[in-house]
Each structure stands twice: as structure tokens, then as C-alpha cells.
Length: 292
Image (cartoon, rainbow, N blue to C red; front, top):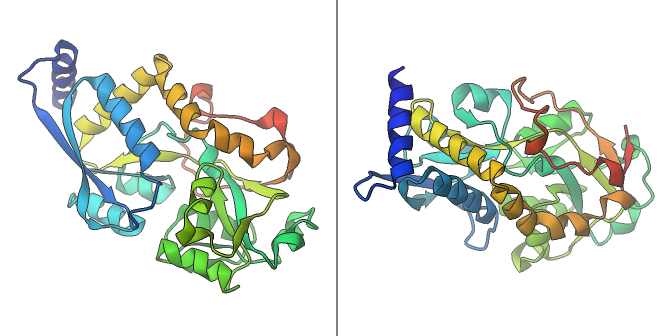
């Protein structure tokens, strides 16, 4: 009850736009690379949500570079950062406080493949998932994707450093690097990542998943504020406008309707994932050839 009254108090301040309202200071994980564009869209969504709460805020990167695993540990301990955005799984939802609104509308689970020039034509001959399993994907050692791929019969090479994953494919220690259709194009525009690699044009995998904002378990007020702001942005149509402005061209480039898409199960997807709330998800079901 006390937490609810505090939330209502802050929302009342937001509505009145009081000049004397408190200022929230939020720290997010500093990316591993200055050229890493993966923070751009989540920060835009966060700012949109904060705008719709009306609160005053300052938003800063952490003082140190934090890998995803380190960021989650620090957030759990309530140190260095105020929030992370990450793919969900059962463990993360047990340890942290999720805002169960998928900021990428599920597209983070649509994966295309980075491959070497030598393997580019080989993948074009595949038509079954059994053929794809002959090649080993690389993923982050603490990413939920790793468990998903392993549960679906893939032997996965893992790494702790994001840059290293591209090198692992170049060195042919892994056969391919699955990347989401909202990430892969900007990564391939980065000379640090794209050397010797190409986007395979024939195949894709898909599994149900969501990327959420997560907060420390004690930070219920801020979690509720961000959720309120996101829901207001969705109702106003501004969230979808931002989403499409950032991702429509990537969706079109992915050319899903002309790919064979292998559907994978996600055994780490929490039961509370709002799969039935249609406004939270982007679907391209009618435009693709799907293979179970």
C-alpha cells in the first residue's frame, strides 16, 4: 500500500509538471565499444517512457564498461547502474524486476546468420534444421540464446567478449553467428565487425522471446513509472512510431518471406511472458515460409 501511494504521489507530480519535482538519476551500462549501436534504440524507448511519466530525469552511462553478465550482477547487487535491458529468462525474472513490455516487439528472436565468404554458398543448399545443426553457432556464454540453441540440438561455442564472437566465426571456430534482424544490419555497417563476414540470404531461425527493461528488486517505484510511461506511449501510438522508424527498413532488408525459417522452442521463456497481448508484438506470419 505504501509503495502504491508513493507511485501515485510521483505520478501526480508528473501530471502537474511541478517545477519543484524531484529529479531521477538513472545509470545504464556503458557499452563495450564506442561504435556499438545496440544502446541507441533502448535508450530512445526509455526516454519516451520517461517523457510520458513527466518526471525530471538525468540519464548517464556507467563509469565503467559493463558486459551484459557483469551489468546484471551489479544491478542485482544495486550497484553502479539503475537498469539494464536484456532478453528475458526465468533466472533473470527471479533475480530482477522486469517491465514485461517487449521493447523490440519480439523481433529480437528473429535471427539471421553471419558467415564467412567460404561458407556463404554452403548454407544456401540447406533446407532442413538437421543440415543446419551440422554447423556450430557462436553466442555469449551467459546469453539466454545459448540455452535456447542448446535445447534445440545445437552445439554452441561461447565467448565472453562481443568482439571476440565475430573473430570466432572468421577463424572458423564456429560456423555461424546468429544475430537478430534488428541488430545485424548496423553491425555489418561497422568495419570492426564486418571484415570477412557476410549475411547469409537463405535461412533464418525464430524463437519466442522478449527484451525487457529490468530493475533491482527494491526499485519498485521506478519500475512502475517506466511501465506506466511505456503503456501511455503505446496507447498514444508513439511507441509504434519509434519502433517502425528505427526498424522497418531492417525488417524489409531481412526479406523473411523468401527465407526458410526454422521455428525453435524456448524452454527458458517465463510463463508470465505476455504473448496474448497483441499490441506488444510485431508479427510477419503472413509474409514468410515457415518450417517446423
